[in-house]
Image 1 (cartoon, rainbow, N blue to C red):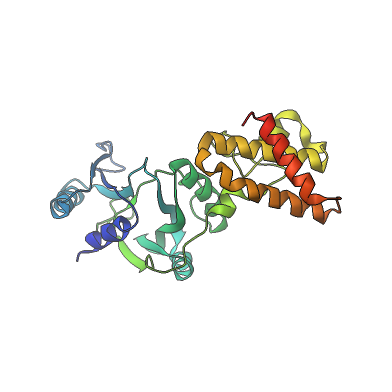
Image 2 (image 1 turned 120 degrees about the horizontal axis):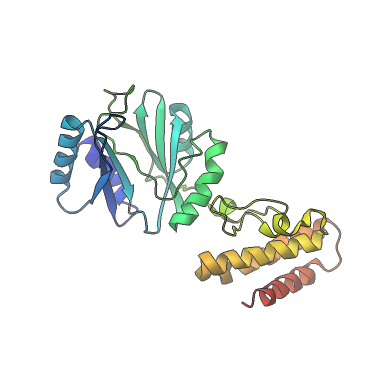
Length: 274
C-alpha cells in the first residue's frame, strides 16, 4: 500500500467522507486557487491525478474529512516532530512530517465534533503544544502523505507518516476544552457565546460581581451556547452544571450548596426561556 493510500485508509476509518485538494504553483506568480475532489471508489485514479498535479504543476496535495460533517478528527499544524511523536504515544492519532522536523497531527477525539466545536477545541490545544494558532479552523486542510512539499524553500521533501496510533484505545477527551469552567473571562474567536467563557462580564462590566452573580451569568451563557450550537446535548449537560456549582459553592462554605446549585440552574433556564 502506498503512503498516500495508507493515509487515506487511516482517516477513512473514522469519518464518512474525505476530500483531496490540489493547489498548483503555490507561491508563484501563476499560482491558482485550490480545487478539490471527493474521495470515492476510484482511489487509484484519484491518486494518479494528484501525483500528476504534484509533479507537473508543482501542486500541493491536501486532504481533510468533509468540512461540514461531524467527525472526531482534530487538526494541529506546525508541530515539532518531537512533540508529534510524544502526543502519538499518549493519544490515538496520525502524524505527518511535512518538512524536516515539522509535523501536522490528526488527533482522534473521543466523540464526533461539529466544525465549530473542532475549532473551539483546537484553539485551546494549539498554544499548549506550540502549534500554529492561525491554523485552528474546524475545516483545515492538511498535507496528504506520499507527495512532495512544493512550498518554495521546502521543495523536495516527501511528506511521510511518522506515527500512526489511530487504533490505540485512548482517544483525546475534548470535553474539558469545550466546557471547562472559566468564571471570569473568555469568549470564542468567532464572537459567539462559548461554553468556555462568560461574555456577560465583558459586556456589562461585571468584573466586580459577587460569586453568585458570576455563577448565574456563567450558567445563562452556557445554556444559551448549547441551545444555539448543540441543543441535543443540553439536557445531558445540566447535571454537570449543577455539580460544578455545588462544588464551587461548597468550597467557599456556602450553606446548602446542592440546593443553591439547583436553584441557580433553574433560574438560568427560566431567564433564557428554555
